[in-house]
Image 1 (cartoon, rainbow, N blue to C red):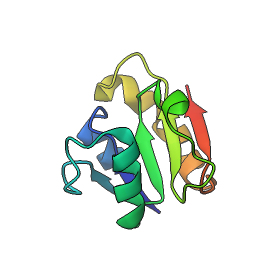
Image 2: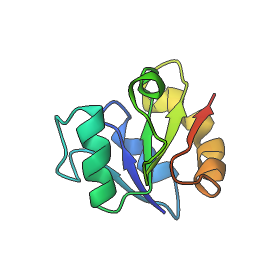
Image 3: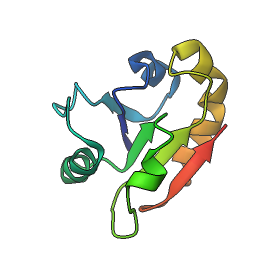
Image 4: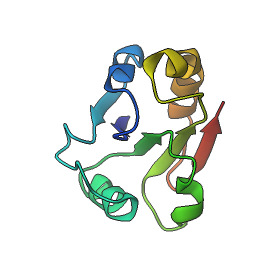
Length: 106
């Protein structure tokens, strides 16, 4: 599973997702891109899931014809301390999410 962590997600979260190939948006060379272009470029780079805390993404993006899925973590903030309690559920979702799906956690 190849996962792209949004710029608004603590980059340290990837250390708590064992067995998952995670890269941050900057690591993937996609920093500063808007969501639509970011998702398109992420798909071209072979990412299967985009993990974000951006609550507006589900209203901004049509995922119907996308090959990437979105995991939306609904946490108090994007800080690692607020994301860590969701790590087990994130791992579970990453093992079952399908292309074009948006799954909310939290």
